[in-house]
Length: 145
Length: 165
Image (cartoon, rainbow over all chains, first blue to last red; front, top):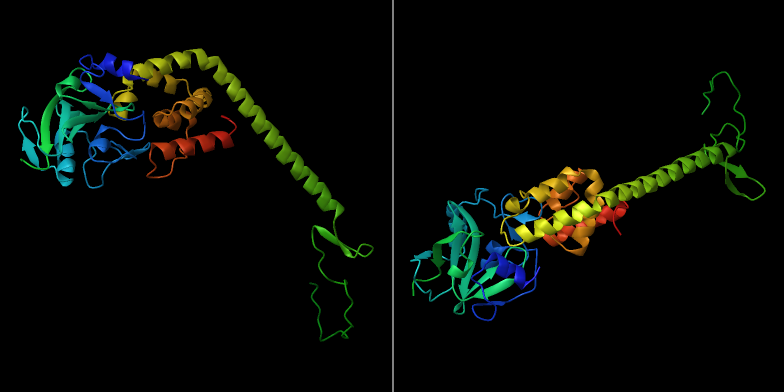
């Protein structure tokens, strides 16, 4: 699978205009692992079939459970949807109450791991919104400044 | 050892080899001054070897017939894999990926599809662990394994079973 496939699923992405490839494909980690800096595990409940799920958290994909896990990693400040983060931040994409994707803000750009495919950097959160990942419902930052 | 009522008998001098238990599989060969396998044991051993050989041959034949059955499924399997990859590659949750109709259909193919899934896992790593678990009806993946380790465990199992190169 290549970048053409990513662009097919996320029609707003335009190579070299608003996103760039940042890694090779890797089936070991997903977007949740990626935003928390783990490049060896696929974070998803339950902890079976090669998945990892942090012990002590309910085995569901609710936004509130993911929020608790992210806050434990120091992202404790909730930002408004249109705020441009100044510090490391994590955005949660969801459909209803269940998360579908995570993106992280680091060194002035948004970064995402696209399923089993590449990591990419993208210029805005809106570029990944749509049928596949739903919409951004929460942004958590390490700092409000 | 024969029991002896010492109270009623004279004590006889000990004779080597008299009254001693013989080893069930080996006899002392005085010409070669060593132990040799007893004819009875040679027969038993030959029979055991024949059984093992027969089991190995049967296992090879089974693996060969399983791979033949898998080949018949290949055209449909390849089409399902392409569809599954195209439509689920960018999802973040395996639980959603495995709920795709193409993945269900692959699981529905049952045990004959296992060699094809193992080949796919070897050549284009992806999350085939649920399908393998339910078609092969076993799980060689150690607790806490990440996807790469789970892949290695399945391929080791598949090679041991003669299902994948």
